[in-house]
Image (cartoon, rainbow, N blue to C red; front, side, top):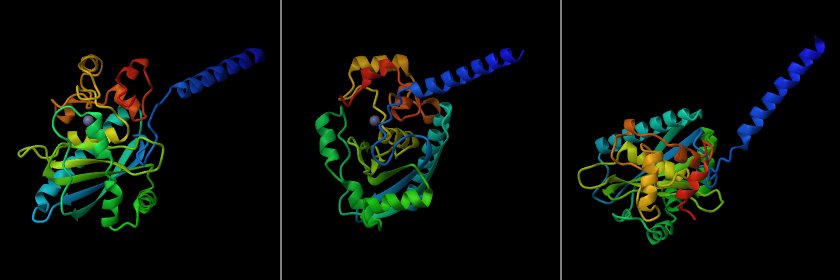
Length: 268
Ligand SMILES: [Zn+2]
């Protein structure tokens, strides 16, 4: 009897060991670099509302944009939970007026040249200083110690029409990451929660899955069959009709990798 119990105990311990070791065997290729690391735990987003002289943000428009940001944050929390990850997002904001807001990405496919031009601008360092911080390191220290967060990012929202883009870090460092959004996409449509959530995911490492410079038409077709409702693929549906697909979840560090994901690597 005793020997049998011991045998059962050993079997139990073995099963637990196998469960633990297999869960850590997943390769979570989160970029893990820059200030926004993994889409779980505590995250802080600092929105900088930019305007140009004579075109300042109207209170109602800014409130509207902040409401959309909150909807985006709640959506991200809900999607992370689908992968069993607890996420909480806090935010803060600052208003700035600068002589000229940089232009958005041109419409049409995004090629590598457009990206490089945009990435040359060290906009975060310049803007956080104007918001009253000594440097970007000072800003990061403030955000981390005040909000006890693991990840920090900046969402710039310009009071101008333009096509938004993300500014993630591509080399291993602790630099600020974030995105540049525009109050309007065209003259009628203002910034929405879907756009804020999409750009935030880029900052954590997600790839675009639609046909653009880096993604081929065949890849877009493949993405449509594998992750038809993924937020990085489709702009056709409202936020409550789309999700964070398994590839994007892997990119932001909260789901295991599947071999087929390599096909979509736009950073090769
Ligand atoms: Zn995108």
